Amino acid sequence: MRMVGLTGGIASGKSTVSRQLQAQGIPVIDADKVAQAVLRKNTWGWRRVVAVFGNGILQENGEVDRAKLGEIVFSDAAKRKQLNRAMEPCIMSGLFYEILKHWILGTSVVVLDVPLLFEAKIDWLTRPIIVVWVDDLTQETRLMARDNSSKEQARNRITSQLPLDVKRARADIVIDNSGSLEQTKVLVNELKKTITAPPSWKELLFSRFGVAAMVIGIISITAARLQ
Ligand SMILES: CC(C)(COP(=O)(O)OP(=O)(O)OC[C@H]1O[C@@H](n2cnc3c(N)ncnc32)[C@H](O)[C@@H]1O)[C@@H](O)C(=O)NCCC(=O)NCCS
Ligand SMILES: Nc1ncnc2c1ncn2[C@@H]1O[C@H](COP(=O)(O)OP(=O)(O)OP(=O)(O)O)[C@@H](O)[C@H]1O
Image 1 (tube, helix red, strand yellow):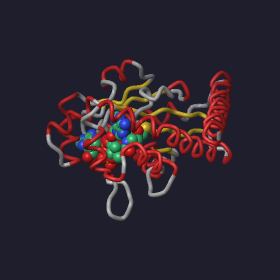
Image 2: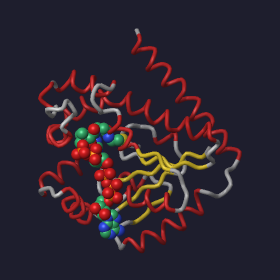
Image 3: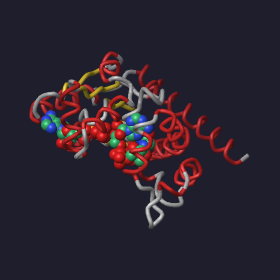
């Protein structure tokens, strides 16, 4: 199974590209959705996060107040590190579960939409790596418009990630999403051809190795948790 990495900066257009790929029949695993699931009330992730941040981040119904937690972690690098440390094993397990489902089903190409692919150092698992890029001003403007946020809130979120130009430099393929949606669609059509081209033997071996390494990783995390 070919595992294609899809990443970029906040509001650079990963979900937009992901939707266009899905419309062409390419399966996508969305790490943001996995992260949301592992933060639901009474889950393993919820317990770990509440243990670190306390009940003050909860709504009356016991669910995490995402806006409140976001305000805390996107304006304080140390708190963000604590959140990442608490959630990382849960997100990794969730991603692994989704990958395993596709592997068992015999999916030939799956796209992993992971905003923090480089930051979490899991880029080695995926090939090719696609970075959805936009210029800084477009990123800020789109983020503010989408989240109805202030310039300060948008800058806090943008600077909490590896700079988008650094990600672009590490990409195998760059999708420039600074133009119109129609222009991006044309680029995504070309992208589909590239990622669905028949895999080489080297690629096949790499993917099997990646999945095997993840199995070992998850077993180690689970074993450490049970101790
Ligand atoms: C802090 C939370 C609750 C804020 O929720 P909110 O609904 O406002 O944002 P949402 O989840 O939609 O994330 C929007 C974008 O923020 C960026 N982002 C999210 N978490 C982080 C982080 N820890 N560091 C840097 N950027 C992040 C990503 O680009 C993501 O696509 C949420 O982002 C979260 O649980 N983050 C930690 C989990 C995580 O690392 N997610 C990224 C998946 S790899
Ligand atoms: N080419 C485009 N032209 C105009 N608007 C766009 C374009 N691409 C994306 N957008 C808009 O920009 C915003 C951010 O896009 P999107 O949600 O796809 O980004 P993202 O990278 O998935 O964000 P996040 O990191 O928060 O998950 C959305 O409101 C989207 O509709």
